[in-house]
Length: 257
Image (cartoon, rainbow, N blue to C red):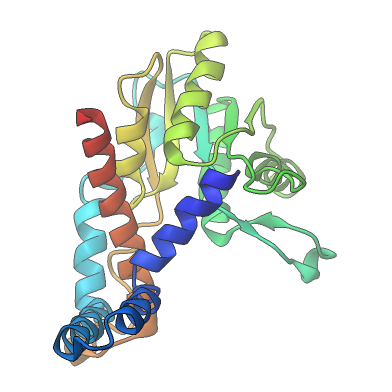
């Protein structure tokens, strides 16, 4: 639990715009080195400006999504895998329109919708994976099961509720499926998340095949000159892409250490 919160805190501080807080702290410590402080702030401002451009966000996301292009009517492939795994993607802490409480995130809804679609086309059993950063809160897996069973009317066969990272998703999910005798599965997650997910799930006892959803390299208001106009939405998408690229870099480093 503590590691999960610490990792997220560090991530938010190192990625824009959280890095501005780090630079403000550096400025307080090195008040006398005005040239260095001004240079750091100028670099941070330029970085945020570039990452706020739709053309930048589309390129960063596209480089991830193009690694596993969309496959139409995936369920017609031969041979079919034996199960479907849906990765957790956070939570919505307050859903008053559904009588309050928690539910899965919007990204999670996209994953669950596609998993339900694959299940209806094939009848394959579903595993949902994701823990909770807080001991008293319901796990992401339990929240996803509620949506699948209560709203999509699709059964969930397995729950993995202990993981806090994609790497742990892979570790604990593989144990459950291998014990159940499963040999191959579809892995459902966003297209931009798929490269890092498959990296974590590779070389396991079970074979994991991409079932990507939500290709978002192309976003609204990117035609003509608009692709060069800074937009808050583009900054969010750039931050998502940077999170994935940094995660891939970290996975590569940890294997060499």
